[in-house]
Length: 311
Image 1: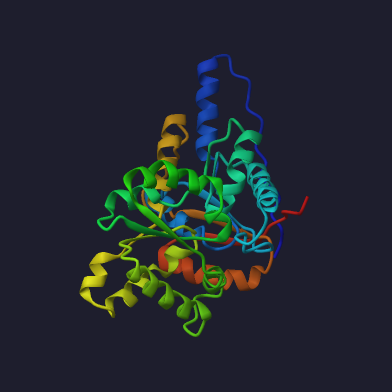
Image 2: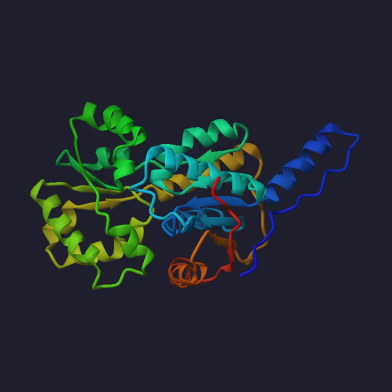
C-alpha cells in the first residue's frame, strides 16, 4: 500500500481586515481532521462515539500495530510511543487529537500536552466516577491493562472519588483480551475462559459496576451481556458495564464548539475516515473492516500504511 504524504496546507492570503483573517483561519481549522490514536483497533470504539456526535467531521485514525499492545510496556516506552504518534498526527494537520488509549493517556498525555500547548488533546481515564455514583453495593471493578492500573491518572481518580465515598475498587488485568480483539474475537480463544473466570470473581465480591478501562474492551460488551443473560436475571441487574467513550465524544464536541472549529457538512454526506497502521496493514484491514461495518454501516474509509518511524 502506498504511503500517503502529510497533508499540505496552503498559506493564508494576507487580508486587510484582521477579523476576516481570523474568520478564514477558523474556517480552515474547521475543515481540518480530528486525529484519533490507539495502539491498535480498540480506539475504533471511541471513534464510534465521535462519529455519532460529529458525523460531518473528517477523521485520521492511527493504529500503532507495530508496538501493540502497550499495556505491558514501561512508562518511558509508552510515553515515547505516544509522543511519536501525536507528532505524526500533528503533521497530518489535525485540529484536535484524541488519545483513544487508556494506557497511552496514563503515561503520555501530560508529555504531549506540554509539547503542544495550543493543540486540544483529549485523553482517556477509566470511568470511575459514574461507576461510584451508580454502585449500590459499594463494590466496583476496573478491567484494564497493567500499565493503566498502575498509572497515576487512574489511582488519583480512585483516591479522590471512590475512597471518600467508601467504595472499594477491585482491579483486574487479563493479558489475553487485547490480542483477542485484535484477532477478531474467535470463540476458541483463551480470553473466553478468562472472562468466565472474571465474572465468577466479580459476583463473589458483589461487584455491581464493571468499568471497561481499555478501548478494546467495549467490542466484547455484547459477548459479556449475552453471557450474563445465561446466568440469571438477578445477576443481570446487579452488574453494569461502563466505558468512557460517550463522555470523550461529548468533551470533543465542547472543545470544538468553544474554538469555533466544528465542521458543518452537507446532509447525507458520508463520514470520511483515513485509517493508518504502522504494521501488518493487510491483516489489520480485515479485522478493522469487520469492526467498522459493525459500528459504521455507511462510511467513506481508506486504508494506508503509515510512515511513522521509531525515534
